[in-house]
Length: 296
Image (cartoon, rainbow, N blue to C red; front, top):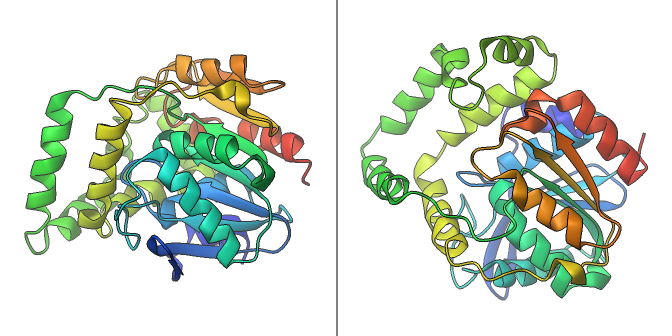
């Protein structure tokens, strides 16, 4: 099964690695040089796999290691609260899998720990790809944080997550409205043979095991609100930054700051692209990633 089919099909069965920091949930697919994929908020290994499937498509010659970051699904939050601690955990994962060096791709809230991985472990980072990624202090309205805490309690009600999931499945286009407000763009995504499946899988995944995605999301929000400046100039790995100019979740300045400071970094700025620019501009992003990684 290729990366795209693994991502957009039924959720594949993950495995657990035991590290000094506790268990880490992951899924491995493909053969070749490693790519470590990191999801954003409300995610898990399944969304890491979606990120890889979106970036790489059906053929890449890479081995994808899709993680559940601490606080998501089967990876407990434990002591890995900060992006620095999570970056060190990724090294333990690579060591356990016998992988010397990996490309790392991160979306949204996966950005800070991916940046720290490249900074703290330069000999282990072969390349860095950031997609709509947070790279600095990010303030979330207190109302959203309060809503997440209430949601964590509500999801303990038996059957609520399944009900929300059924609502999304009954009206997928309506569920896409907040992420993709333009009706023509939504129709284009749904008509695309890959983008539609990826977007529908992303929407569906959030409500699968919803309670186990909230602790990590709250931790990310709280950490990013007080994030210290990250020394981007210390990154030595080849770096590609993909960011939409109309992203209202993570402002374009996050991507621009990284691209301007990392020596030799490439910036793919997507005019009018929102936070899900990877999906709405899938073919363009895939072509750029293939050229960056030198894959077919």
